[in-house]
Structure formats: structure tokens, C-alpha cells
Length: 205
Image 1 (cartoon, helix red, strand yellow):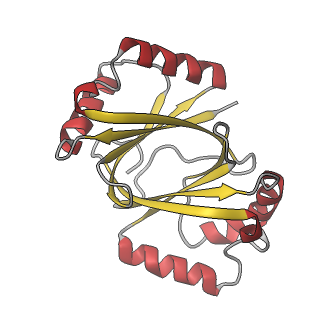
Image 2 (tube, rainbow, N blue to C red):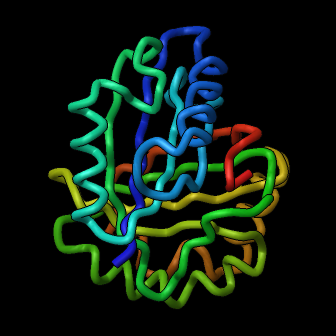
Image 3 (spheres, helix red, strand yellow):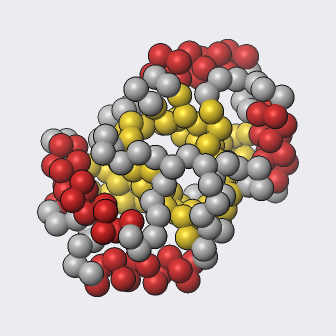
């Protein structure tokens, strides 16, 4: 079953462009396993961060690749510029296939919602009804729930042409009465958003 891995690289100030260049070289050279889906640099939210999205066929392959990378000491070819790295695994919502390549917009919103302990099933039900009308306004390339950590979470990745379009689309979605999903916010606690821009080599851009 497909698993999506999000690697968040905390980079030294002024080194984001160098890190993206190293990442591009790393994947072009065929290093590592998994499929590169995106590489972004954060612009609003947590700064000095590069986010890498990779797809794996299953959890075992994903964890084996993480272990291999950590033991090698070579983190996407950019280790010398990194202050920290974290990995998060997500399962796609079963009824919403991810779009893992394509040109969608100049900015991507990377939005993480914390969910109450018993909230995953109700959230899945609420979002199944609400996602079709929402995606008629603009694409959502990924919606999934976290498989690790102590707090249940879900992730939305939404592309927009620019920040003005983001504001307009979000306003239209709320005005439609179909977003956020009815009853869905009752299961959410903390919400975090990071605005990112894709690297030129990113499959999602």
C-alpha cells in the first residue's frame, strides 16, 4: 500500500538554494529508493526549511530507506548544510488518489491538522463528501493521515497560482457552505500551515 514520506530539512541560514541543488544532484544520480514527488522551500511559516515528498510502495521499503540514509550519514547529499531533519509518514485517504507530479502553481500550502484521539474515522467520512466540491474550485494534490507520532494528524497539500488566488479560493470554498466539511472541524485541534515554493526540478511544481 502506498506510503508518502515527508522529510523536513532544517537548513543553515542562507543555504536553502545550495541544499536544493544538492537534492537535485542526489536524485539525478539515482541515489536512494522511493520516488521523488516534490521538493519545496518554505517561504511563510517555519523558515529555513526544505520539504521533500517521496512515494514508496509500502511501509517496509520506506523504513528501510530511512534507516539506510541515516546510517550512511548522507541526507539527500546536503548533510553539511543541515541543522536537523525529521521524517513523517502518511497514508493517502483511500478514496482520494494523490497527484504526485504536474504543474499546478507557484505556491503550495502544506497544512497539518492535529486530530482528536478518536477522530480519524469521522474525519475520513466527513472529507469523503466534501472533497469533490472543494476540488472543483482548485486542486488538492494530497490528503492523508499520519502513521507515526503520538498525535493523530492529517496533511493537505494544496497548490495555488499565487497567494492572491489562495485567498480567493479559500473564501469561495467557505462561502459555498460545503467547506470545511460539515462536522469535520469538531475533530480538529491544532492547525499549522506552511507556504512553500517548488524547486525547478520538483515533479510537483
